[in-house]
Amino acid sequence: MVGFAYPEISPIIFSIGPIAIRWYSMAYLAGILLGWWLISHRVKKYNISLSKSNLEDLIFYVTLGIILGGRLGYVLFYGRGQYENPLEIFAIWHGGMSFHGGIIGVILALLWACYKLKLPFLKITDLVSSVTPIGIFFGRLANFVNDELWGRVTDVPWAVRFPNGGYLPRHQSQLYEAFLEGIVLFCVLSFLWRFKFCRENQGVISGVFLLGYAGMRVISEHFREPDVQIGFLWFGTTMGQLLSVPIIILGAYLLLRPYFNKH
Image 1: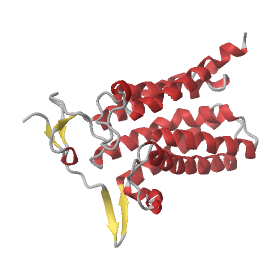
Image 2: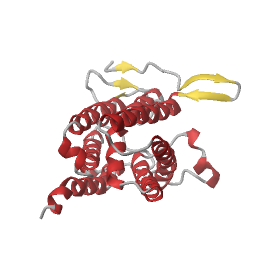
Image 3: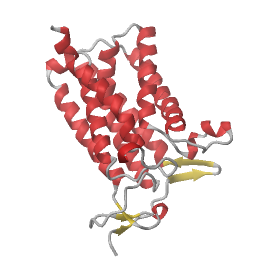
């Protein structure tokens, strides 16, 4: 038989009575805490003007943007006919988060936070963007553990037979995305962060992140099974690919912004 059997890892790390600690929630927590630590390190190393209290406020707003934007984005983009009871929309413990919605939520949250704290918006988005792949990496690993968002049926020797995927050999699209959108993108952004030009031209790091994430998402969607309630859209595209188009446009604008400002 082609491929490997899914290891059937429990999505619950441990439970105490009705309280269950899940890998998915720990992935979000790990991404936020490690990102917080790395931003603090870079603020000190590169003498960035950002106080500890302001950073704590930013982390709060970013977390709020991730949760609200990710959930509402999923409901709007992917939740067709899934929520007969409107209260189910807020049941995030049942799953269903959109990264594209999370990006929108974080952008809006940072716009408000930077206005309130009188901080330079693009300078802050550069800091946040540079560590965001950490959260993506852990999130995609959690998708694999949860036996969700698996890939399309394939005959490659490294295919995995997921129980929720009908025990058919499928691409490990969650791990593809963890590698591309997590590890590779993090390495690229960390490398660019070392250059003064990238750090001082506000928006460059954010632009590379948006272009890199959206481009890699478009590629990885070719191996990922479309959401069953939506399927394929125009010309065989997926919702994830279509949602990546405006992100590519915004990323390209931010990346070219220093050039436009000089002319």
